[in-house]
Every structure is written in C-alpha cells, then in structure tokens.
Image 1 (tube, rainbow, N blue to C red):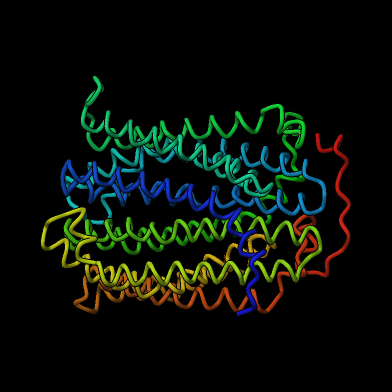
Image 2 (image 1 turned 180 degrees about the horizontal axis):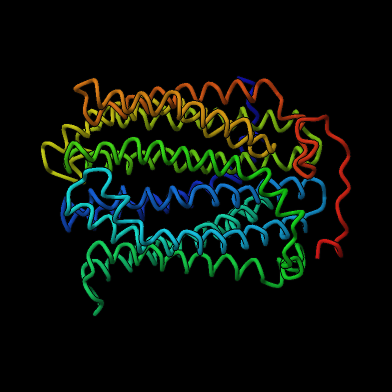
Length: 468
C-alpha cells in the first residue's frame, strides 16, 4: 500500500461522496420497494428479483458502453478540451434509443424464457408481468448512464445525486400508490412496482437533460451544439465501452441467472432468501461502485493531464477507503445475518437459508473492494478489453461450472452457487489488482482506438467548430 495523503483522501471524498450518496439513495429506495412488495406475499418478492435481474442483464451491455462517457469526458477535461465530453454524451443518448427499441422486441419471448427455470406457474406468471413492464425502462436507464457519465467525467457529481434523489422519491411514492392503491390510484400489486420503477426513470432523466442543456452548461461545454450524430466519436465510445458492457452483462448474468434463477428450483423460500441477500449486498457494492466511478473520473483526468504517478497515488488511496468500508460490511453480514434476514421475512426456512448465504456474502467483501477499485481505475485509463476477457474466462470456466456442479453433485442446494460466486469474486479481485500493478494501461490512448496497446502519441483534438 502506498503512503496515504490527506489531500488525496479529500479529493477522492469530494468526488466520491456525492456518487456514493446517490448509490445509497438508490439502495434505500430498493429496500423500501422490496419491503412493500414483501407485504403482498412471498411469491411476489420471489418473482421480482429474477425478473428485475433479467431486465437489468439486458440493460447492462448498452449501459456499460454509455457509462464510459465518463472516461472520455474526464480525459478531455484533463487535456483542456472540456467540450469534447458533451459530444460523447450525445452519442450515448443515441445508443440508448437503439437499445430501448431493440429490447422491446423481446416482449413476446418472456413467457418461454421464464418457463425454462422451473419456478412454478404462479412465480412465472408474476415474473413475466413484472419483466414486460420493466422492458420500457431499459432505454431510459441507458440514457441516464450516458448523462451520469458526462457529469461524473467533468467532476460535477452533485447533478446525478440530485436527479437520483428525485428518482427515488418518485419511485417510493409511486410504489406506495400503485402497489396498494393509495391516493385514489389502482391497486396493481407487483405490476404497480414495475410501473413505478419506469416512471421514476422518466423523472430522473428529465432532470439530467434539463441541467445538461441549461445555459451555464451550454456556455461551458457547448451541450446544445454537439448534438449531431458523429460516427467517429460513436466508434471510439463503442471501442472503449463494449468490453465494459460485456463485463457488466456477464457479471449480472453470473449473479442473476447462475444464482437467482438456478436457486429458484429449490423452492420459493430459498429463492426469497437469495433475493433478500442480494438486497443486502447492494449496501456494500453500491457505494463500492460509486467509489469506482469516482476513480474512473480522477484517473481519466490525471491521465489527460499527463500525471500518471498522481493517478496511481489516488487509486491506492481509494483502495484504502474501499477496503475499510467493505471489511466493516463483511463483519456486519457475518454477525447480524439472522436479524438482517428476519427484517424482510419471518419464515424460519427463509431465515435459515439466508443466514448461510450471508456468510458467503461476508467472505468476499474484501475482494469486492479490490474489484471495484481497480476496475474503476482501469476503466478511467481505457483498459477495458482485458477486463472483459477476464470476466468471460472466469464466468465460463469457473463460475458457471462451479455453480451448476454444486447444484448437481452436492447437497448444498442454494448455498452452492453462492460459494461458487465467492470463489469467483476472490480470483477476480486479485486478477484486477495484478493488471493495474502490471501497468499495461499506461500505453492506451482512448482517442485513437487503432493505436490501443501502442505507445502513446500526442493527440490533437478537433476544433470546437468541428465538435459542433
């Protein structure tokens, strides 16, 4: 561990805390949503998570691409060409339109897909209903990723924080109205939760776009001029972003399909226990992701300024903060696992299985800290292709075989896939640490994809007129 500096910790905190607060706000809203859904019944809470994770799996690939707007905006800011960031944000918005309309085409296939996992007729019907409504939010989520990436990249994290608070307040209020039929609204049950989710995305995106196009941001970043589709920039964004998208999609696929959907065959009690455990995981991984996004912006800016040594210093200072938090959360999961599970469900079967699952969650917290820190740092440098390859290899050759093997050849039932996930997380975190320390990311230039992996050369940015 490199020596920490007060200046560095303060700089990371100024950028990371609003992002972490945004993630915490989303976590609180998710907890409240799950609690309200749980009040309807065990079947509803068992169905919501698989359907939601499936929807997010479809979102993860294009969202991973648009979130890399942060990398371009940060490095452009460091190179004293801040208006470049807005042009990449617009390309992300165009991608969100394509993603949103494409995913709607999957609507007719939902019943067949969810019937494959043997969850029972009642659960499948609820999953299909919830998933079909959530499809409408995919394009909105991808657009939000592009906007958030822009604001994080230019080091204005309070804008996404405000938008997220608006989203979560709207979500909780709409859930209260539409799930139970309050304030004159229809009582839609689980469908109401899905509608609330989509409508809250509309509110969040409206706030982000309003600020993005506002006179102060237009004056500084030419946000209203850079709207035209630009194939060259879109190709650069895709070149850096598609591996991040693959990484996100496979990561979600691993934890979603290989754990939640497979676990469903052991009954709704074990499925509910896994779903609740994932809710608790969000308390630790959402702030971890927030810190990683802050490091993406910091590393990108310092690389743009040519201050590689300072970028490295900030990464290890961020690692210190991450490990402190994740270790604390791991201890809490281990010590308080029974009351944590009982908060959501008083079924003794759910609680017993959930306690065992939370032991697994506690074990990999420290290594998740490595994962979030170094994946954020490598993304800021544009070193996304190696990470995507690593995720694919570990998922296909380790996570999937161990998960399926544990189900088929042991009596661990739902705990088996969680143990596989623990092993996966440990190896992933250590591998990302090695990659960053190896330093190959120093040779990458995100603005000239054809030169990726070669020694950096001086890059001349287009004029602001060309950017328009």
